[in-house]
Image 1 (cartoon, rainbow, N blue to C red):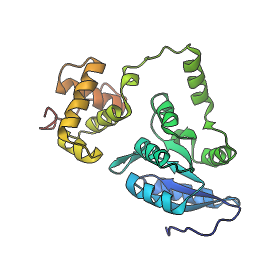
Image 2: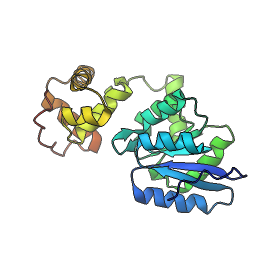
Image 3: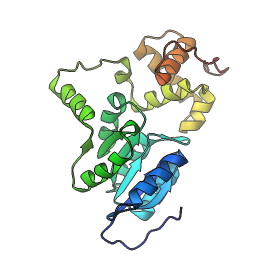
Image 4: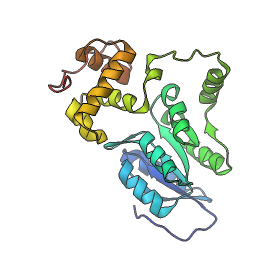
Length: 236
């Protein structure tokens, strides 16, 4: 669609960041049906989204956490580092129990999962534009339990990983080798090695094969599945 920095009117201007064309199309149709909201632009990766959001200055950006060759959490951090005042709303398939707190800590104003349906995005947009955070009841209860101490910190070993380590674990679970991971996140292979060793230590894993199996099973949520063959460079 045409990126359109039209003069502002009373409509809420929304920018959509997602790497699935069907999701973008669906959100565009849904949002543009509203009398007070309009989509002003879209992108399927972090660098393009960062540039266009700075240029177009939307009121709200809807951001998926999984993007082409990039990471939604990093995009959120970059926008906040540049003091962009856009409201940031995460719309993702990723489990809120792992990613919601991380996204809010990075600077997001709200979090909803795609399981809740795109219709909830309209409610979320209006909520964050009123200056409030948008969280589903399930996420809000989970965060309150965490704050109240009724949920034990570190219930999952995954909680101990940094955002970057979690990204590396996810990419390994997709079957990428160390070189591919390094290229994807824009760091050296030595840095990936360091992240990998930290992940193994925190998760109590002893070898590259254990790490890959854990990453694959965690990503797919089914430990009965067999992990893919280990890439030649995963142990580099």
